[in-house]
Image (cartoon, rainbow, N blue to C red; front, side):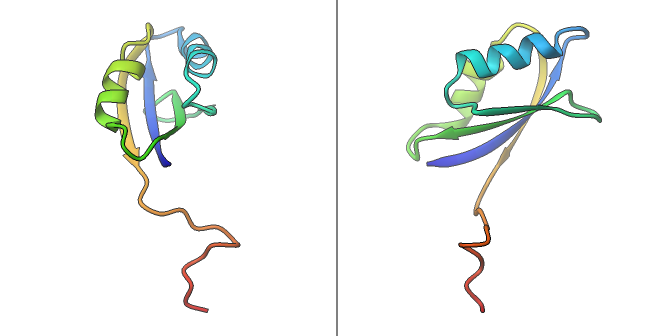
Length: 88
């Protein structure tokens, strides 16, 4: 499984509608945060390893009504307490 994040800028007055559409309609988006700054939402997505992330964002995310702009952040590694760098 691959994880990535998408910063989402919404049309004015549509942030909560967009967030609801993401979590209600996309199983790949288990969590969406409202945030401050240049973007309105930060969504976490999880896809199968062989899924084209660019095509997914283009066809499934950017087509949601109320989304004005996106920026995709692809994750390389996840470090947790039980799975760190291994340099102990």
